[in-house]
Length: 226
Image (cartoon, rainbow, N blue to C red; front, side, top):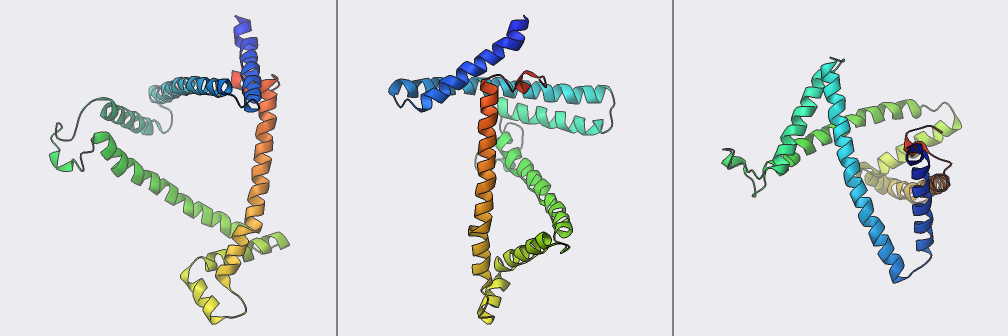
């Protein structure tokens, strides 16, 4: 039993990693077929992972309600929304059957209506609230207390002015400084170079993690820290 818990996942990760790595350098029909088969298996595993995540979510909120932990009232809302959306997506019902014929817009069912008219606005509201946190962080970071902060402040001012109509008005009025062109230069040259450097670092770290998983050095996916 210990073999299937400790050694077997490492063996599977090693074999799958080596096979998929070797397949990339063998451009044949058999190699493409192998990739398609692995893709199908990956979809099956993702489906089971989604089911496991849903069960874990339900267990967490049910336990929170049963133990009366702080904020357990929001767990009632989460479970109610989960049940309503689940039933609306699984059962063949429509607004007309529920007595809401006037709310049946363009033939969409209850699930699509709730998603477009309830979930999407709430999601937009949540992300719009983040703007205040970003503004607060920017206010603290843009204080010109050092050379780096001063450079950040100047770049931010140029970008904000160059992306609004007043920037074009300034460019038409002042001949020696074109704010929109300066903003485009900052976006396409220094910013693009920094993004590529960050992306390169991320890709190298992904390669390192993949190698560690393939050779059994990284085993956190088995639930342990060793």
